[in-house]
Amino acid sequence: MEDRIKSIVSEIKEKKGDEYIGLQSVTEKQLESFKWYLDHPLLHEMPELGSELVELYDNAKESKFTKMEGIIRKLDQLSIKLGQEDYRLEEKKEGKKLMFLDYPKAIKELQTDIAILMHSPHGTSLPELIQGSILTFYNYLNHPDLHRTPELFDEMHEKYEFAKATDFLKLQAFNDMLNKLRIKLGEITEEMKTFKSIKEQSRELEAEKTRLAEEVKKLQEEKEQLKKEKDELEEAKNILFNEWKEYNEMIKKLEEKLRK
Image 1 (cartoon, one colour):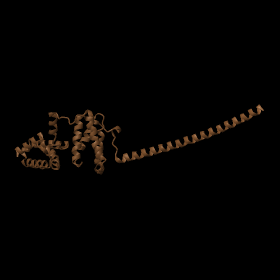
Image 2 (image 1 turned 180 degrees about the vertical axis):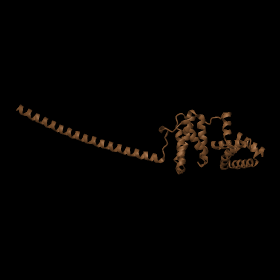
Image 3 (image 1 turned 120 degrees about the horizontal axis):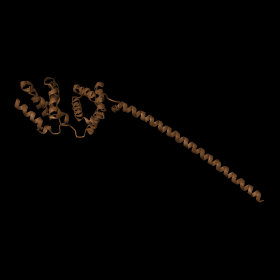
Image 4 (image 1 turned 120 degrees about the vertical axis):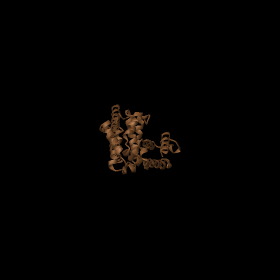
């Protein structure tokens, strides 16, 4: 069994096999976490747990890692049974590599991903409490200094992808992340609240349509007023022309009389 566990650890580390081609980043992270537990020094004292982990891995691998439910559930149990803090400390010691090259772009892409979710039927059907947590997370992505803290964003991205992979049924780590963001970045400001729900967008659209309709009405009234003024000017012009014509005729008659 120990040899099989070492073999799995090597597979995950080196991404051996066609099953590892095109894996989603969240699945890779889940497998990395799973690998850490497989390599845990206490695991050799728990042979039954070791056998269970091997079986979970083999089942997931057979599905080309598209069915990760068993591993995801086990990761939660393992974090309680074997702990997780040591793993985080180990990552710090080793110097964890950054996940992205362009952080402003990565932040925008994550915002887009969340916006698409929250505007979808699935997103709008989530419980209000969960929607509120996701929107709080979205607003923190607007923090002006977030792109200067890539390690923090990496952790945010990881926690969001994990929560999304569990269909937001397991939110403890996600909510812990929100608390961490409040400590690190402070409270959300009004400037950071840029997300608008479909209802809000509809209300704004209706308000804009009303405003435009009023503008059109105002322009139409101004047009009619200009037409009226133009007609009045045209009428005044005609009156002046007729008066000028009459005046000229009168002058001609006077000149004719004087000649006689």
